[in-house]
Image (cartoon, rainbow, N blue to C red; front, top):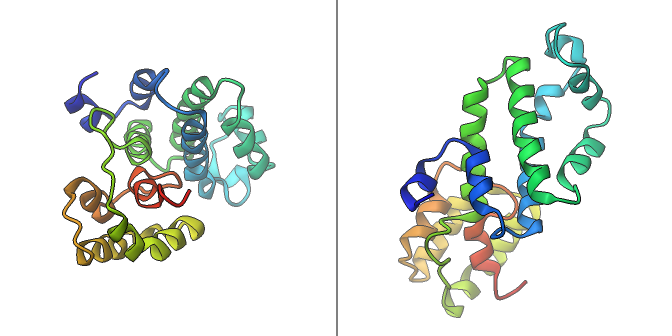
Length: 193
């Protein structure tokens, strides 16, 4: 895989394969959880209203305990394999529920991977301490409360502090999806964690 392919990929399986040996277990678990949480709203309410009668029984069983299901899929012994399983599973659930085509869900999952890993072909920028100090409280609030709609406000605060690092500002101002473990948010909090 090259940089252009990573930045435009819509196949999370291909991206995960590229990350083999490069991704931390923590980031892979965050990815799996983000995928599971994407489809939890689909399962709200009786399954019989959400899925067609021919939906596999495994999808129906999943709805009985959402939290346990998220943890089960997100914490396998082999995090890469588990993350790959989650991508396929969630795309199928979304397709069966008629909420989004499987290809659209795969594309959304690829965007989640880019949020978590940024551009692995370029080093993550290091922000000067003076910039980070200015926005640290806001960044910590966004992180702790998962207040991702405040990402543009975080970008504005960084710009006011003198940041001109386009990759971070563009990501924070971008449409997302943004998830826990976002590479840009991690770059801001890096000195604190």
